[in-house]
Length: 355
Image (cartoon, rainbow, N blue to C red):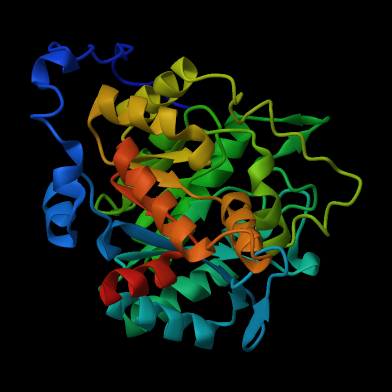
């Protein structure tokens, strides 16, 4: 059985409006807002938010082949074999990126109805974690906990008579999290959106002596059209023809923000160390509400569809995709995010370093 939250969870209220009206701050011509914008040095002094390499988490796709394989729907992103993955981890570390998130492109023959490969201690994720930690033990490694990369139907949980079952799925997710922790994962990240999974995973890790392993929950994960290229990257699309994989019975309705606060509150009560909002750009209002309401480490995921549309616009000459990407990443910080998961992390870190 899934454990209940140990304490009541009060729903936070919206932040109060500013007390002082803006009119009392002065008026033109004595106040000229352009003065502080006139020079680069003064713009730097006035900047309210700053993006650094330390704000970035780099999601990477791994496969069990040698070398790299481009992902057509995600320009500039490749699936990496273990050798290139270790090299990429070294580059990220050198640029000051603190953590990498691992996502597997599981071979179709290893996928089953119940996603048994997720529990294999020698699966692709565990191999990747061990390879990175062997060469770069001081870089953080984050692992996704969900069954969709390993199932033939592409759902995040177990399917029984057409229904994604909750408690039986949570029991499997606990075993998946433990396998990842044993491989050396630093951050367990449940993305499945099953009820009660954070508390169950926390208890499982603690009982096994992994109380130091952190949990970043996908606390407010919406049923979104922006995930399309990701499912292509892990092979879920080609493996699920004819299956629309309707995930609205467990992922959130894009219309709701109060519900997001309830989800975050429950995950925190169950032991989440950090929380995430996913997708990112269409949900910056949710990021702001979460940060204002709870004041906990809050992250956002600039998902594959967001990345792909900005890069595609750049490739077509419609805008400067690099400048747009940096502007978007700064927007996450302005909305209250402590960090961003982005496929653009390495390029962003290079641009930050170049100044």
